[in-house]
Image (cartoon, rainbow, N blue to C red):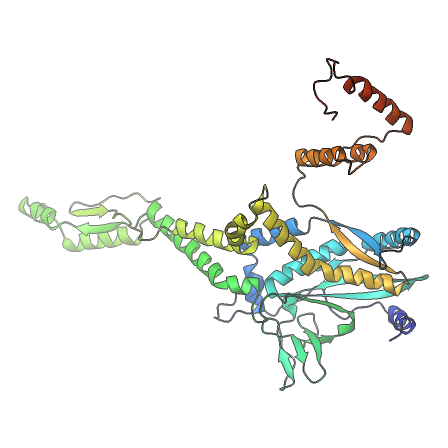
Length: 451
């Protein structure tokens, strides 16, 4: 399709910016419902995100990977140095759109950054993420009317039947049509009479993590560990209650009963039995315990073959290590031990790969917008550094570059946060250096080092 034909088609679509998908869905199960079956369904995967250690890992990883970015526009032809005005014009329009786009659930104006975060969360949970966009004509611009995130778990119902259709193994509502060689999307739970609705794939941004097999995802693989952690936590709380308030045991002492009978003390065995039953049924740390003669209350020592909190700690660390690739960092750190911080370097690589996986499709979408509007530019996201800069390292690097004449004095001053010098000031500084450091007998000249 020629560019003008493609642009004309997009402009016709822009007349109706409404989107067919829903960013807010209603699920058929009641609030708080948890699937207890053995099958790992999209609902169970979504529910596991509420487990504290999982939520902590997902939110922490998201904030590390996607702290923020800047749009950087580059000419498609790297040798073209005439695109300065076009870059400024396109950037201004992109920033205007960023103020209004990005719907995630009920939240609006989340921007591209929010959409990337939402896509990564669904990607880590279900291996895939879906967004929908609509365009509209604004003067000479073909702009985005909206870009919205569609919850992955809303694609949980299979609508395709027959041998030509292959449903996704995690999200059955995403179907591959072998006959047409296309992917179709059926969203449910959005108030369409209980029926899944097919969405227009031309307006969808579909992202899939192809680095993992198509029948698993991060949270699906973690399902056994998460269930084990929840079970150990329940066992640990039960053990804590048993140890804090151990079950008491009521016992009738036969020797005491015989002694009382020999002393001709009136006693009825049935009264003792009923008294022990009453104590056993009403045992509590808030009740006063008064035992009749001939009965004893005992608190047996609770022995635990497994310390639940050690298992709890192990499973917690296993889940966190899975998301942050801790085992990989520890094993391969020596491979790059020449660096000062091999673990940070590997974590940098991990974060960069996540940015590439979930951020690159949105870069391509903005590059497509540039193409629609006739710019010969490409958009690249300049992601913010996730860790604070090492000021001492930066200073030493700037110093080495200046001493080796790789940068000018004004470039050095700019990197150090100093104002640039004029030619006259540079000449005066050179004369001062010559006076102080040029004379070997000068007491102020202990070495040849000037900076």
